[in-house]
Length: 293
Image 1 (tube, rainbow, N blue to C red):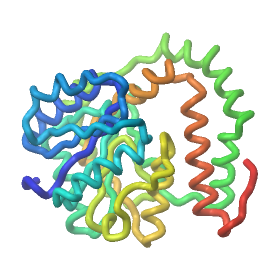
Image 2: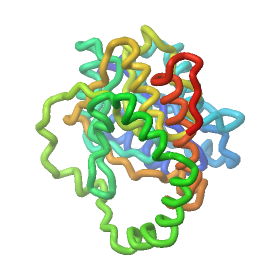
Image 3: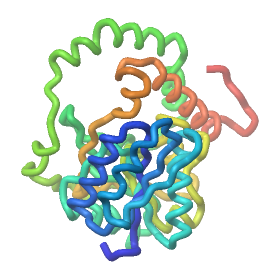
Image 4: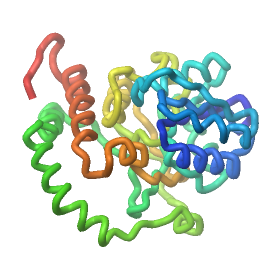
């Protein structure tokens, strides 16, 4: 990847240790990559004390308030686009790189296949790959069921089940993998795949995306951003491309666990409900039609 072709924006909110680890990973595997850290209104101001240890290509943009996932990324995307970068990678801060080749693999379809969005294999401590999220676009019936899944009554039922039974069992018996477990693993030999939706923890936006949009749908405060982005791509007659040769390690939910007190909190489901309802009403219902879900 030549300098100037690609830049990366990463969201930061309070979890300084995760952001510093991410930047150390960038510095190890992709030295010289332009990285913009967007501090999404953190009440603490301790991140600035760590920035001096990184090269000048890694910068910080502080926002006065938390404007959510899409709002924070859009602030970074706008600045990097003003600097002239045709490709912008968007990342969570609880991600680590695994090799030096993944960015080249990830950005190739953006440059030679007129693809708007690409995503890598996203490997987790649970030993699974979070991509692709959805291979095919849901039909209207399935989309409606996805909204119903996040009904308030069902959210509370799942919360009580998770909080008192499932989460304690998971924490006791789960065997988590570390990034080192993936370093020597054989790389995925699958070919690139056209898909409807990719995971939102790490993805790249290319020129074919920016021909139509300046950034993400600002409605997405947190969670389910993948479906809204997928529909933006679908509306311009394109598909995302999953690139299995590119790999990152995702520690998962570090910010949400800090802010909401654990993986069994009800708040993430409420944010997801808001985003999924927005996705469904905007892209599946006839204009002006509303349904109470």
